[in-house]
Image (cartoon, rainbow, N blue to C red):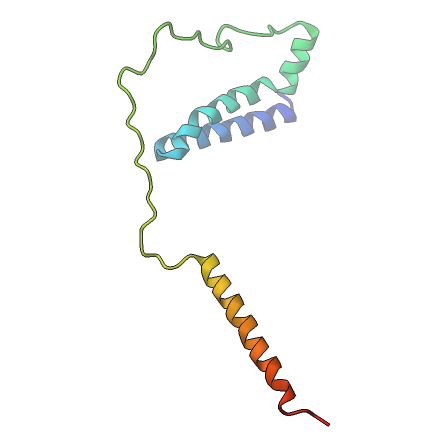
Length: 125
């Protein structure tokens, strides 16, 4: 095995380890575990020595173990999945921030006009 083959194999092993950890962790990470395992298998197919052998016709392009599994003839899910509960925004979290910004802008303009209108009462000569 060449150095590049070893690097590719090491990367595939890391992906497999990550896949196993993700599957054990559960939740969203478990959904990614299958994809990571497929990526590890695909990465092993990209070894430079295998690519070279396939290009020269010494290695088979596809093997029975590399083929995609056939689609099932019947649906796999027997019971309907429960619908996730809708997340509701709790009431009473305060006023609309756009309303607060609008009131602050209007108050600032009113204060500026009052200050500006008083400027003529004490002129600087």
